[in-house]
Image 1 (cartoon, rainbow, N blue to C red):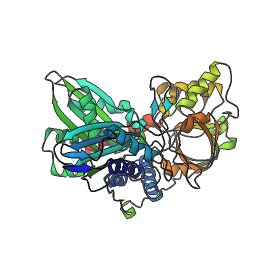
Image 2: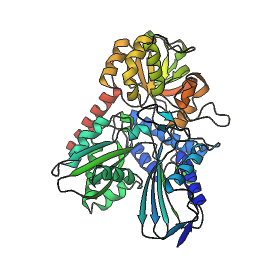
Image 3: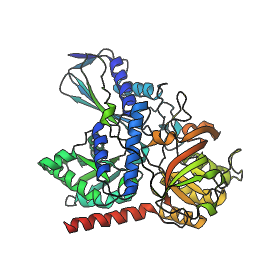
Image 4: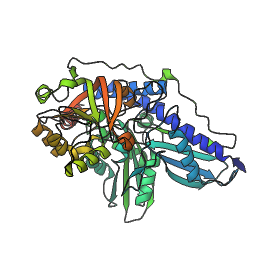
Length: 507
């Protein structure tokens, strides 16, 4: 009978969540490095360079890889020969206490993103609890823990289907992945659960993402099971779509496909797809009664020495005196370095602005969007001498419903975020002669280094969703939708899907 101290379990959870906030799994780093070296689309290659540079910077600085430090999901397999030193807390309560300690750590505070009353007030719980915990009783005298922090941008792109028994899973995936857009921040992984019931398939899909990247080894040895062959077939089919890094078009959309399956009803074929983004964060450890888990830091020399090169089409812009006339000649795909003052705002701030405008109150005091840019971001709190914590972009698509209002009623001329915009929003951007700029998702610490000053200007009670004013210097973005409506998230994948198909025909 192994005795596990609850204090050791809690400490291990807290340590693991801190660890994964700034250390990418090295198998993922290696996979992105390989994809970077193979990539032929300069825009996608540039995005992966920023992801790799940000990854090393986060490891060196021990600060979050991504500003969305995620919702905690924890799989706990408790051996039936394990005894706890006391029963003061349940497993759920212990995971929550470890989460609370990790996210409130003063040396590396993590962004609290969990809201209670999800269908109503959506009030932030302030400590990122409760966590999502899956508990299994298994044979043995140890505890196995797999824990992850999953960002909302990728989680929101999860898909489910109750297929007919004769339906082709690969074909469903090929039709489904393009509908997910780029908000899940490729290149990443797709976790797929097949069988059981609807909820079982979803849990299996999530658990599959805890496994390390091993697609190159699988391709080399060849498939030995149905699931292994499916992994290879889906990997090839998804990359043939040409979606590429950040949805810009390219050779690599996924670095691996993970599958877990189990028996199902003869009339059923449940399939759940859950993507993992460029901020892949998970840890796996065991407790045997000897103390808390000992997670060994990776060596910094294991990161690739990638540099970010500015291309010839880089445009440096002072946005403090920018007008619609100035942005009229910015072209889709161009790299722009922004300097000057930008305002921030995301879901809650946009909703509050809409309510104020609907009531005829105007914008909050001190907020003027005339000829200005808004950055869709919810930053991590600063520590030490930081101006702001990691501050990468959030998914711009969620703000589509507010875009007409912002462009027509506030004087806004530009938006900055990640992923694509919907067709109606692209039309609105073209109609208003505005622009949409894209920052790289998964490069939050790198982006934060371009922010030289930060202050809250409105809605302070919203925490990370408040409106900030950032003063930036050479903040790297690319023109995703220009003032005429040219859209790289449409043209890029289409071009590269064709190139990939032509290359295969030529073989």
